[in-house]
Image (cartoon, rainbow, N blue to C red; front, side, top):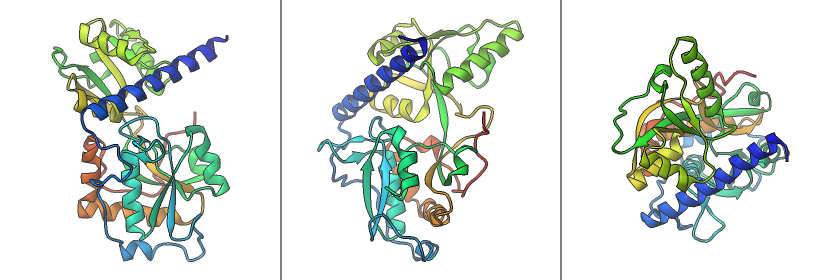
Length: 312
């Protein structure tokens, strides 16, 4: 087995373990995983938004906004209690967009690797699932932003660490990070910068079992965990065993944003951007994010095709 394949298997195993753990915690804490989602924030249609739809655009299913969702991690999305309906923060955002457009929401569960082809082939109208705006993706997709792309540092509830805001703050700490991830690459760059300044590098730890990872943090074998803020924030709110000590952009040092992705030139992006801004203005957007403990990632205004992460 190649080293690269081992790393990929390691990362996938950790992701599946984390997903199962989060769903279990959510169920134990009484989080609504029903397909009906009776507490989901809803909105009336917004005529000014509907007026922005291109006259020649044909929705995948007439009268419906067909949206790709990737069930796997809360607070983004998991399968509901019926084992087939995606529920979570991203379906909630999709619902508000569909409501604004006066359309019924139709969610299509897909694997992460399949959504780009699904957009290109017209299988669905949009994808709403933690997609970061990049310059490379903008060549084939249009974007309507709705959330900051943040990474978060989390420590045990009783940790003496109060803030991590810059590379120097991790010098000498034992930091858990996922293998072959963007955050690992950022941490490695921080280590290089600290060593160049005569500081100790962070000791990087990897775990393929989320339970063992949590034990390491609680026992003091590790000082801090670095990962996607949305997942960790939801977990912290439900489990009450960890706390946030710092966030920074997932594209560090470049700002990154999460957006609704639609086919390039389809004409949907401006209407979806207007839909999100209407929901920001009326307060529904904030309520939807708060429902999944995503308030820290709220944006003041949606934009169509803003600058994305640069090509590598």
